View 1: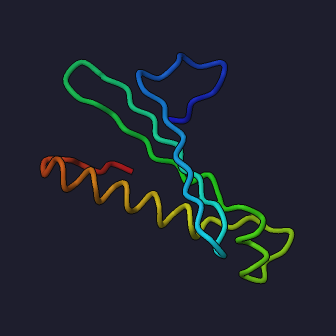
View 2: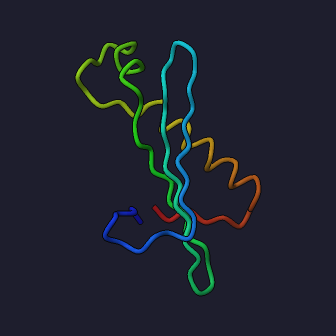
Length: 89
């Protein structure tokens, strides 16, 4: 459920960034669409900042460690709020 400028706009789209001192920046995209009898939520880890990558010794490469951790925290919060939440992907 990736949002593209050619697609329909989502019902709700959020960009969440977390900046921590000495570990850099992580970014996560959250997209929600209401269907007939359910709400679909996609959580996409967008990656970490260059500073975070350099600190991990992976210069000139992509790193998703911090953003995957942030995405997992969002999923845990959703599970806490709705015990009937179903993961499909």
